[in-house]
Amino acid sequence: MAEYRKTYRTFSAGETTALGRHIAQVLKPGDVLALYGDLAAGKTTLTRGLAEGFQANQPATSPTFTLINEYPGTLTLYHFDCYRIKDAREILYLGFEEYLDMGGIVVVEWPQKIETYLPEDTIRIRLNRSESRDDVREITLELPEERHVNFGC
Image 1 (tube, rainbow, N blue to C red):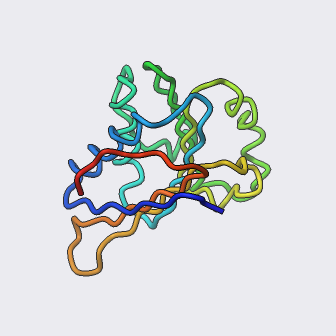
Image 2: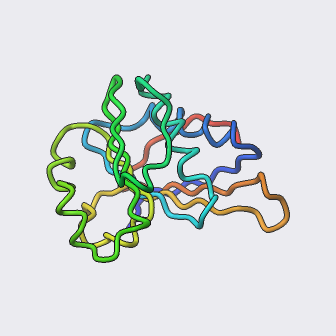
């Protein structure tokens, strides 16, 4: 259960990306982020901001068909997309447990598919689209400890 919770509102894809850059500033090597949200909720857009925050060597894209993308930067970002996983054990065949020990940042889209393999101290981020405006997102961070993300939304 999260000990610290903070909700942000973004009003464009650019703001969601910017929030990702700000979140990157408070992450530590070995952190795992679980991104929850429906299709088009902004999970990959937020991840793009995380990659930018770590000065990755390329922009983050959805790894839906490859299941994992790696973005080397000041910290390496390991981006998993579990949308196509049918059985949670499939994540083990991808070496998920080894990635947890690599000292980078692990980001998991569709984490509900592999919930049993997520570490207890996983940072959970819930992205919800506004029902009234397609470009508005409510993004809630649930962290095991208080970390201040300086973002003005």
